[in-house]
Length: 364
Image 1: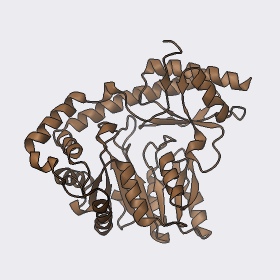
Image 2 (image 1 turned 120 degrees about the vertical axis):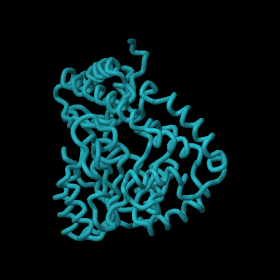
Image 3 (image 1 turned 135 degrees about the vertical axis):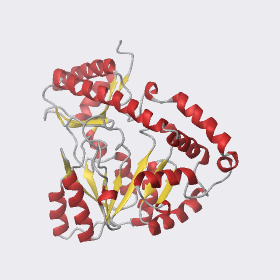
Image 4 (image 1 turned 60 degrees about the vertical axis):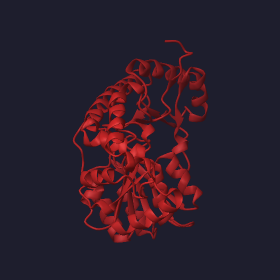
């Protein structure tokens, strides 16, 4: 492997070798055979009806609590537009998904970032903020294998968040696209499942379990809220993409999605283990929490290594990474997000060697 061969830890997308191309081709054929009229017309603003029903059954909710969208980021945008006005307080994790942070800032919301610990958001810190008078409209939480930190919210903290939401009357936005791609440990119940009120709106996506190109995500929440957001969707696009949603439905109802999840999770587990091992070997003074699933690992660099200097030095050596400051309202000067989803273990070893060389260079 030469330096000219770029190794990217920058983007959270699966490599082609773990995408079930044959299964998707077969699902597309079945979709057109089974329902040509339904998938070539406009459809409904709430999504392809059979897929909507399948999602409702997966989450144990009524079908009128589900809205299927063009990717989960659009689901996020619909919810933000519906609930958040300029000047409203919103809680996010520190660090958090960069596009969520950017969208909330563009909307004029007042973002309050709460520290993430190895078991998820610091609910004690949040409780203190609420006790001091903070009244957020919503709290955006990525509970499983968080992007970018890779950590998972503990069961205790899931319950604590629900109690805080009920007491202080805010919505928990459970943004959960990674839950199914677990490669270690036992799955935890979603906050949607744990909540006995209307405090949680859940979003997920088929991007991580099938492939990014399908662009199919969804919201699950109280029926009244979903109905209101469906009106926004009607005005925006009449209906989302029926062809993609029908293909996803056929892929899921056939059981292909379960096989895909097993394949993706096994590959990600191998890659995450390789990345953690390479970091411990090549850059032993970085700190990180090893993930149990998902696509990302967050590293804290030594104080004498600045991400603004390290990122270009790494690029010069043929490895791309994302600086931590992109995921924070402020700070992150000594942190990076590394995505391991699109690189083989061999590429990971070489990529971390190059990154270690860049670290040595910026240290002088």
